[in-house]
Length: 131
Image (cartoon, rainbow, N blue to C red; front, side, top):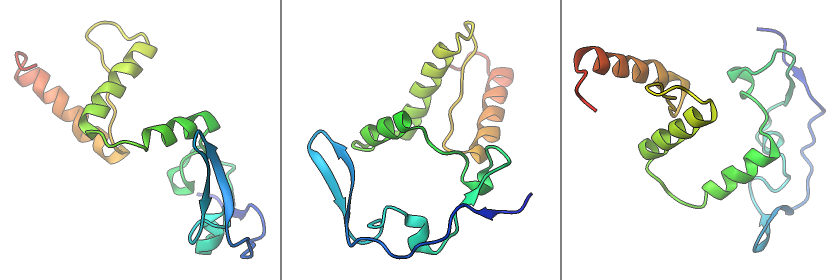
């Protein structure tokens, strides 16, 4: 792993509250944690310039604004995570135009993917009649 280079000098001075993102009901004001609009500065963590691509150790990736908007919409409700994983897998399979019999698997994290895949392989090879 390479050297982590600070992205900018840390500034621990910020307004008492700041308007964050506007939604259909108006705008949200943050007070307390997050009020500076830079939670990393508030935690004393230095932001880095990532010159190595998508890396979990550097936070993965920066979200696109359209993804942030959809995540904000989705965050307004509770859902069954297993149901969400199945539905998202079906949507991804459609988008990838996978042939019949192929599927996309969505998991809640990278560490869950290998056991999930192995369970599916075991189910198919040992119990082909189980849906």
